[in-house]
Length: 93
Image 1 (tube, rainbow, N blue to C red):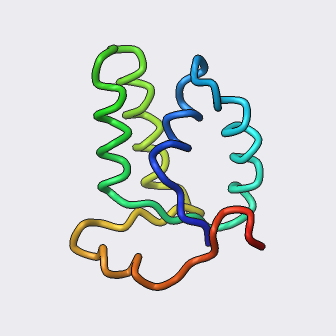
Image 2: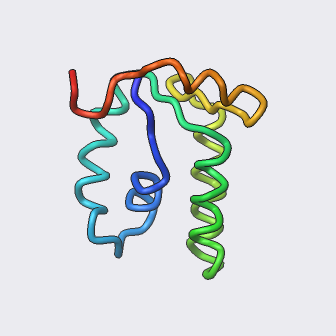
């Protein structure tokens, strides 16, 4: 299980982001395993895209899809203590 942070989601959703290509390649790797992120991270992503209606709508749809994905686990603020358990760092396995 990999932890996924806001920078990845933002680069993946924004084609103009300098790291978009890398994020797309990582998405192929992440699709093979379960992933964990938090509601706070997703809030940060939505805040990052709050300036433009197209990107905001795209981010909202992506997050809605993520919440029902069988390979994604979104930790709520109430369960944030679950993230204290060490998880592998991206690229460490």
